[in-house]
Length: 78
Image (cartoon, rainbow, N blue to C red; front, side):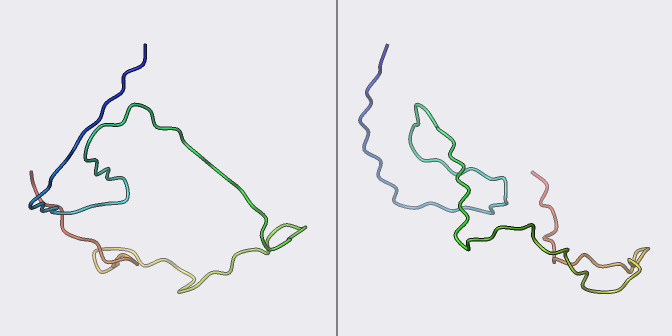
């Protein structure tokens, strides 16, 4: 059975407190979501990639003084 839905949405004000990498923000409905994954060799490469090079100190820092490489926001209790 097929449903056809037509909707009009008017948003006068919207406030988003925060978005993270795994957040989903949706307005309206969605009957079906098809995932797509495409892999293109636009550079014309024929061999494997070279080994990654390490940046930074050889030994990882330990203890409370070890700061993250990316500044993180303090979690907000909900």
